[in-house]
Every structure is written in structure tokens, then in C-alpha cells.
Image 1 (spheres, rainbow, N blue to C red):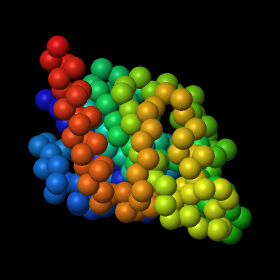
Image 2 (image 1 turned 90 degrees about the horizontal axis):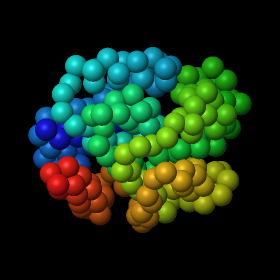
Image 3 (image 1 turned 120 degrees about the vertical axis):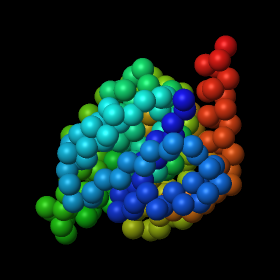
Image 4 (image 1 turned 90 degrees about the vertical axis):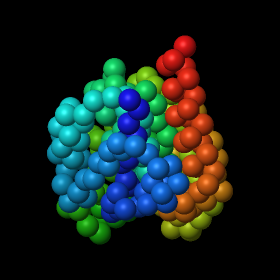
Length: 199
């Protein structure tokens, strides 16, 4: 049984997937909520504990920071994990968080997602062993983020891995969650995975 595992972005919740949930109509989907004030390590442990109790094949749909959590999860649940679509995930961390730490040095979220944090650095050392498509969001540039960006994440951070496929979508960091193109991509990816598994 194919299970869609939804992991939201930082400062959001599973409610951010309302459009995808409505259009995809997934059966037995799992929504992994996490707390931005809890350390990334603790959030991961909570996710591990929840998924350990689930059966079936896991296909991850992850927005932004949720994609980093999915990198760790597919490595732990190697047998169950079969594919992923990430949306604007900052694989190389967030430059905004680097600036944010100057103002709020003890804010847990900023500590976890700077490019030099252990959480981000260790995720880059994990090999992605499942078919994975990263949606690169290409509009929304703001001047206080250095380099081309979607209003939140730099394009450079979104495309720094060489073990995933990339597709560009003309949406900003949040609009991507309401993109019909993303819905079609997820449908195509999950159906292709199921056909390949049946062969």
C-alpha cells in the first residue's frame, strides 16, 4: 500500500497542504507535524517513532524544511521509502537564518537551518537512494536575500544536490503549495513508481 507522507515547512503546519490534500485525495496519508521551537533532532526522533508504527510504502511530499526531514527519513526507512517530491527545499540551508541568528541567536529554528548547522551539514552527507524530484521555485525575488531566490530560499540552496532531479515552477515559496503543475507532477511520480514496482 502506497502511503503519502506530508511534511510541512518551517513555521507552518499540515494545514498548508490543504490544496494538495483536496486535489490529490490521498488514502491513508500521514501528516508529520513538528514544532519550530523543538530541536531538529527531537523532531526527527518524534517522526521516526510515528513512522515505525506505520506500514506500507512511503512516498514523501515535503515543503521547504520538510524536505530536509525527508532526507533523513528515507535513509532510516530504506525499505519502505519509494520516492519523494520536495518543494523549494533548502538543501544547503537558509541564508535568512544566518542573518536571523544575529538578531535572535537562541531561536531554535535559526540554529537548526543555517548552512553550517549540524542538521543541514549532516543531511548533505546522506545519499538519497530513492527517485526524488525537487521543485525549484523561480519567482518572488527579494533584495535582502543574496542571489536569486523565491522570497525565502535561494535557488543555489535549492539545487545544490546531485542525487535528485529538478523541475522549475514559476511560483514563489508559498504559492508552490497551490500549484496545479505540482499536483500533476506528484500524480505522475506516484503512478510511475507504482507501475515500476508492479513490473
